[in-house]
Image (cartoon, rainbow, N blue to C red):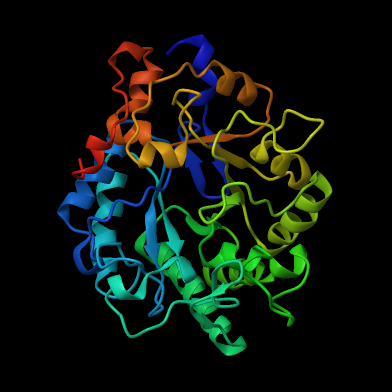
Length: 368
């Protein structure tokens, strides 16, 4: 291990989560679970990353027990018979000395009902809006919102029961939880709408319900972002004060780690500081944070461009390491680099950078 990168390989502890290093496998949708059930190929996919030295695996998005949650018959579910498949994933990851958390997901209005298992079930959202001004789905009632909150909590409880080491809620990128956060898709005037703090209530109540279901010691993570798939330039908060008011209720609700998604981790979040979103979130909450966003990719590439098929060159990680040394954030999530290099963590630990393969769209064709 090179001294320069040693911070990446220091242990990290949160409650019952005892990570051997600071590297997190980022959640990445793979679409290889027929009828929503993860099979042997999914087990092997995650086993390889655990064997490759990742400190914590966060799975691809797994859909909660709600008829309008999923966007594909091949997205893995986190309920019913799919849980047997996830139990095998947990067993394989633990056998390699790894740790794993499911990402619990509801697509909301990002779902296309014509392409999924329940085509007669409409897509749902806080105001039936996929993008601002274009109503194309069902506006959730208060009781329906309560059912979805309960489904997220059940997912967290099932994660603990199956032996997962933590659970993450997908509250980013314009999916259901984030649709409540964003004023462009949440026009409600009841307790689920209003200013940013009020729009955050749905996510906060999910965390509260999950914390009650799993007890005080099981680690809970939430993924947040300013940007949306519907609009890359959108922002929830325009100042540190606005962001602080938004995220502090999640701390009170029981969140242990914030997973802060940006398209480029090196870009400052607010004027007057070079802190990124993870840095600001740690500063205002005091909680551990995960940074993510084009880590280990060349500066000209970003998340969406790479997944659209553009290649990316492996870049030096000096800036990332320096910022971690300063304590700006605690953990780093690696995405596409781990698709191309299941052993990315071990390769970097041993300083064998020449052995790293560049990401390309070819790695998406199969689950390897």
